[in-house]
Amino acid sequence: MKTGIIIQIIIAIFILSAWNLLHLVYQQQHNYYYRELSSVPIIYFIPQRSTVDSLAEKLRKYPYLRRLETEVDSLINARLIEAYNLEYARDILKDFSLPNVIKMYVDAGKFLAPEKSELEEMLAEDYPEIIMNYNDENWYSTQNKIEFLNKIYHAVNILAIVLCLLILILLRIHFESRRNEFWRIYKLSGGEMGLRRKQFITTSLILIILPFLIVFALFQTAYYLHYVRYFVDLRIWGIEFIVLIFTALISAVIQENKI
Amino acid sequence: MLEIENYSVTFKKEMFLSADNLALESGRKFNLLGRNGSGKSIFLKSIHGTFTAYKGSIKIKERTPLFYKKRKKTIFIESIPRILPEETVWRNITLPFHKITIRQKQKITDLCNNVGLSELIGLKAKLISFSAAKFIELIRAAVQLPHILLLDDMDTYFDEINLVKALDVCEYALNNGATIIATSTAKLENFDYYYRIVEKKMVKL
Image (cartoon, rainbow over all chains, first blue to last red; front, side, top):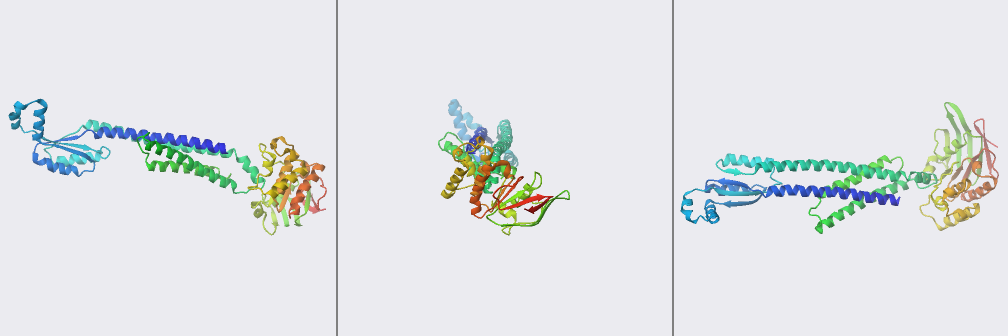
């Protein structure tokens, strides 16, 4: 039985580790998409200097705002002259009215479709003269990629739960069944009736707690030693722990008449 | 110790076995005789609590057989040896013991010496003879000091010499207040009381 327990612990560790690696890969890809999206600013071209502060004020209230950069026309003028060596045209440029610019960097994780629509509506209603420039195509394409990634992630998670339950329950039943004859003879010989139940509970506790703690410690250590960049969410650990509890409960139900 | 009143078993509305009133004292050996299929095993199983489809009442120390079955105070040794073939003789004898006391260890060693199991103690049970396997069961049962020890078809697995040795083992349980009920097809020597199943009825000889 001891060999059986060790084999079950090793397999449970292997399955849980693979499952947690899946979370890490997902997080890495997810964050890559959002990082890419967050680096692209929304640019507002504002014809009136007086509107800049009012718009900036409004934009600062949005929870998804990361950074706001304001460039007024005089500053743009000076930058153009410096960048293209247009000193000789300074007087000519003075006569042109260049637009003011606000660059808005958002937290892509919070800037989703409803937030984007709300922002666009606010601009259309309150500042119809302002031109908003954003790479919509890139935004939609990345959002689609994220959505697809989420779907795949959820599907693979369900598959992982099913596989975990199936493999661990079958293993448990296999090793318990191998001991059926022992327990039958044990009972007939006058052995304590409740001992098998006690041993089943003890083994279940070992098979739930030990693999979980080992894998948890492994990933925590790897995170603090910077071998992995992401921290697996505690809720995910909770789900994994619940799945392990279910393997023991379902095995107990299947073996009910024998334990 | 054991009180049986108006015991009867019917199969398909036909009487299979019956016994009027029986009272068996502790520290005594009873031999129930009967041909194969006469209901000896059913009777033992009724006392053991594994067969309950009977009429009448069976009381062990004024309680039902099930009460003692759960507490392992009635031990039933069937004709087929119930041992673990891959385990040693010693492990098979001590199987039901969670912890074994020095006294129990000494007693088991003595009983093994008496029946000639001491040389086989470290061997795997699959390598020993049928009667040696039955001695394992008998010693295992006797050292648990049951209230009732039920031995089915005792003459099929012990010859005359081994039967004397087996009764020596039983003596230990008897001295501690057990009642021994053994069934057989032929009369066994050195028992205190004999009953026979005649025409589906248990009668005292």
